Amino acid sequence: MINIQDLHFRYPNSEFQLSIPEFTVAPGERVAVVGPSGSGKTSLLNLLAGILIPSSGAIEVGKANVKELNDASRRDFRIRNIGFVFQDFELLDYLTIQDNILHPYRISSMLKLSNEVRQRTLDLAEQMGISKHLKKHPGELSQGEKQRAAICRALLPNPSLILADEATGNLDPTNKTRILDLLFESVAEHDATLVAVTHDHELLPRFDRVVDFQDFQSGGAS
Amino acid sequence: MIDSLYLAWQYIRFNKFKTLILVASITLIAILPLALQVLLTESERQLLNRAESTPLLVGAKGSALDLAMNSLYFDDEVPELMTMDAAERIYDTNLALPIPLYVRFQARGLPIVGTSFDYFEFRKLTLAQGQPLTMLGDCVLGAKAAAKLGIGPGDKLVSSPENLFDLAGVYPLKMKVAGVLAANHTADDLAIFVDIKTAWVIQGLGHGHEDVTRTRDSTVILKRTDGNVTANAKLFHYTEITEDNLDGFHFHGDTSIYPVSAVIAVPYDGKSGTLLRGRYLESEDAQQIIQPAEVIDGLLQNIFRIRNVLDSVIALVGLATLLAIFLVFSLSLRLRQREIQTIFKLGCRKAMVGRMMLAEIAIILLASGVLCAAALGVVDANAEELVRRLFVG
Image (tube, rainbow over all chains, first blue to last red; front, side, top):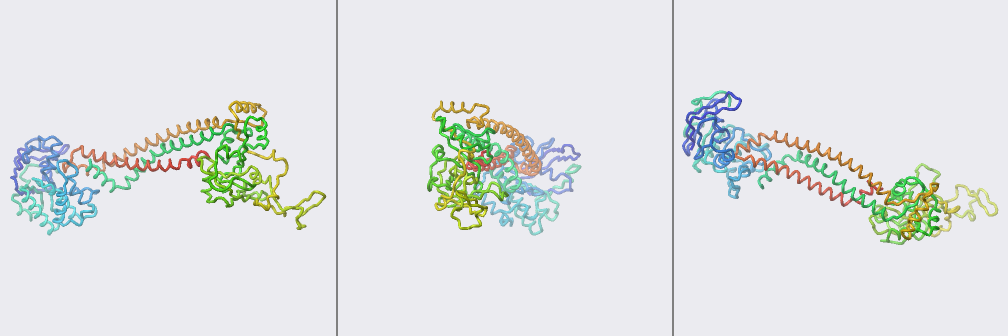
């Protein structure tokens, strides 16, 4: 599913640089990425999503060579194949929770908004325990509720790769287990791959594999 | 495009106050020159129609514009007055029909127009209700005047005193409304028509009081001689003309020297008009004859000159507002960088973000356009009235 070879990345005007000699993830595999702050975990997710472009090396996700795609194709590839749960949710204030979850369908022609999708939104919200908040705006929700809405948005298009950046970081222990269960269920149901950055070592045994970023050569702040 | 519009609409709804300010600014900038255009076009129509339908106007020498504005649109700026024999002078030439006008007094803020029966025929005014002027003290109301005052045939209307502080002044006259005219969409609609003699009664030149030869109240009589009785101020003056006291009303002296503000001269043919104009060319003549169309055309030239200046001012203000709106959008884009980055991270193409921004601008412009059209509709529907209030009278 994921194959990174001899990847080098550096932010413009920054000392930080990330070097990954090799990183592979098999289809359907659930990988946890751990490491100290600033080690480049979030940068790795952004590189996998094609949000950041490596300065050298190869990065393949599925059949796509992310580095070789042009800007428009990379965006199309991302919205069609990747569900990204951002560390700070990144919900839009002016949209209701329902519209936030459906947002990917409204900003790209790659996804078609149908009644079935709308129904799935309701089902997902029900599973996440936020169905009563669908008509509210993010400003009216708690951090944990916002996080669950952000996860719904990532899961709705049934992506083949789910990238989760501290997806359970804002949740209480009960919700943490519930959300992780849901993530794993979704992964299993759609034969998807999960790469999750986490600081929560209690969760690590549930993943198929744990990658420690201290093994990679990086420096500076991400 | 539907999704862009949907998202743009959600953004606008969420930021309604910012949007309202933007829409209001754009609407105001658009409506000002457009409304001005509508009002000026209507004012031009009203002024020219009325002026062109009035061939010649005779008045005392002085401001031709005051004479035209007072005689045609019943403006409250009274021109220099002349005497009634000005009408007789025209009549004697056998060149034109004279129609005297005495536009000086008001009742409840509306002009009282003293004139003769010929005026109604000349202006093609027809009655919608009631009777024409039949008796001294009667008045006929223009259609809008009747609606505005909320009165009709049989009701009473009291003239307003010229000067509230003149204790020795004449009493206001209570007039009987004889009829209401059909609307003709000119200044006549907002006027109160009386016979010119009634206008003189309002001024106090004609009056009615109890018969001093028959009064039994000796305290009223100052002096009684053969054929002459002198009364004091205790003598009762009538403030309303009725059939019972009509005989008690009279005019002292020769009415040919009573005042009029203008005389409309309706030449019997083109040649007569030219000849009549020639009669007023003498520089010593105390009267002037004007062609209202020429005077009003001069006024319109000035209005349009002012309008050009106004247009420039509006253009500058509009430019400043557009720059401010551009600044608002630019700042808004900067403030929305995080949101735009989120949309990009989700996989949105740059073109889509552009479409969303365009959709927002389109909705704001559309809302401004709708508001502007509605406001213009209101201005257009009331243009006649607005022009009369703002420009004409």
